[in-house]
Each structure stands twice: as structure tokens, then as C-alpha cells.
Length: 241
Image (cartoon, rainbow, N blue to C red; front, side, top):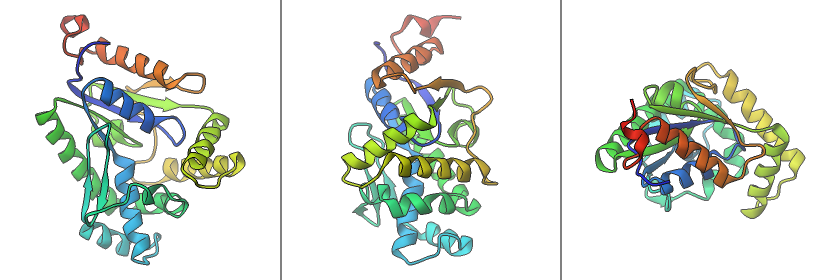
């Protein structure tokens, strides 16, 4: 579909729904920026673990987050995550980080700090590139509640577990489907029951079930939604009433 994105696409959903792959490919296809907010929480978690801080110690975690030198790239084709100048793109996907990130991301002070930074990044990309696809768990509800297009990706638990296990295996991490299912269900519970910014769909989000869809089909569907909202330059829908 022709056209470049103008504005924000907020892409939320639990683990294993294809958020990262979809967000990156959608942003690349629409000449837009890309922001993985989950990577930011994972990077702070890396800092917490490296410092030997207990992820359940909210005060210590908050203090560490305030001092973390975090840089995140917004290119959909070459995303980067730096912590104190070091590339931690591989580290943030490790099992230790996955097990601890929910505790770290549930700390209100951490969320306040990172949401402010996420909003700054979004505005910077909008002013320079014009459009951005932002993925996470509270984008449509907290980070960018005024986004003109909010999408909530879902998929069956079995499909999500299979995808996560395949991702782990491809990255050289040992994981069975059963282990992956336990992991995603645990993360779902922790993220959806936390007090601050729980995982949930925004009231005006468009639900998209990816269980039986290929990535390219999801990209087409989301591109059509963006066109219908008048967010793509050069598309007829842009001037529609």
C-alpha cells in the first residue's frame, strides 16, 4: 500500500502475539519510526540484575532506573538498545530478564520515568519523521491515549506459546512449548493485575486476532486501518470526510 505514516499507531497486546515483528515491519513499510517500549523496561531490568538489586525492592529499583544511561534507537530496520553505551539488545531477551521484568516494570516510579521518556521520543520522531509505530502494553491507554489508531493484538495461548518457544530456539535459548506457555501465562497475569498501568485494551482499540494470520496479512490489515483513518500520505482515504 502506497503512502507514509503520519501520526501514531499504538500497538498493544500480550507476549507472543507478534507485536514486535508486526510493529517493525509495519513501520518499515510505512516509512515510519519505531519504538519498542518493552525493550526499555527490559534494559532497566538488565541494569537491576547487573547491580545485584532485588527486582522486588521498589525503592532500590527506582533509584537505579533514575541513574540508568538508556538509549533506544527508533529505526525499524536497525533497532538498538544501549545501556551505559553498551549494546544490550541480546541481553534483554534472556530468561533471567524475562523472569524479572514484570516486577521491575510494575514499580510506579519506573513507569513514570520511562513513560515520560517514551512520550519525548514519540514527539521527537513525529517532528522529524512524521509517523511512528509504538508497541507495548500500555501505549493506547497511558503512553499515547490520543493516538489516532490503536490496535490490540491477541492470539490463542497455544499459538503464543509455540511462537515464543520457536523464538527462543532460534535465538539459541532452550525452551519447550510447555515452558513457554507457563512463561507467557505468568507474564499475562502479572501484567494484567499490576496496580500501575495494567495490560488491557484501550476502549477504542481495534482488536486483531493473529492466531490464524501470517505476518504479511496482519501488516496489510493494519495498513488498511491506517489508510481508513487518513494517516497515510498519498492515499485517497486521507482526504475522505
